[in-house]
Image 1 (cartoon, helix red, strand yellow):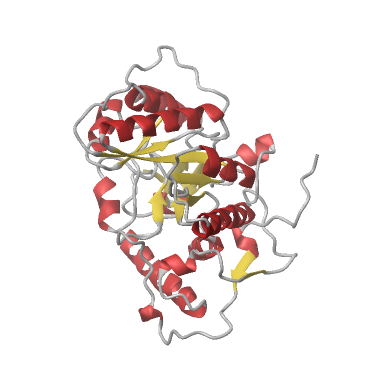
Image 2 (cartoon, helix red, strand yellow):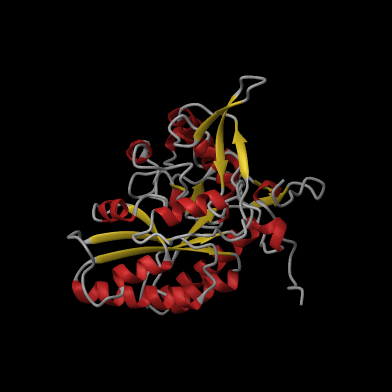
Length: 359
């Protein structure tokens, strides 16, 4: 059965349309930061992006890193107990947070990214709901990000049935991912973000109308398929609360990606690979509390890329700040909350320029 409806689009297919008239005279009037003073950007929980040596470098530049699952289990517990974002498997999450008692440590706020390729599984949300109930009963805060999903109906199901704080959208179109091209599983990310944002706003309006605020709705994280500044800006304009960046940050000076030198040209590049590659699978196994002996990786749905270095992240972020504020001024949005409201107008560039998966 082919789902009917409007054509589906990638981020590269769309452009922001200026407001009819704007009250903003200068981009300097616009605020591109979230309420906590950070950029609306998560670093992907990948060992080519973040490790213990550079975690605080990302933080100092007002982006939000996540400790990846390739970091040893004991060290991830350490960061978990400092109220920093940490990636866990579903089993690790269940062990720590569904045992009817306060988890290891002493902190009062835990931030967990349940890092799975397929978050369409009902068991994940049963575990999250149980963990959230235990957290409330024991007086600590548990903030949970799940992902990834690739269907708007799933986001709506989560709104109705799960106590989730953030949802990562997208399957298959990351630079280090070959899921879409090899499994045929994919939902064009721009349409996915837009349709999920519409669902979120419908829920918000309904709760406001009936004065019912049982819980906050999951924030939308556009994860993967980000190739440059305009992709981030388009994702935010479509209604994403955050974007998640992997390959772009892996090419920065602050990255922990391996350096490689071409023996013929002497060109230096950064080695980038997906977390579903066999190499990453082995590193994840080695980081477990109890690594599996004679571990055999599954079929890879990731690939390797050599990235051209992009220089220091502060220069990239300075440009991003300027470009985002410029677009916000065109759209007559002084703050980020207005810009990500989902009410900014966009247009399809041209049917001849529509992007393809993994282009």
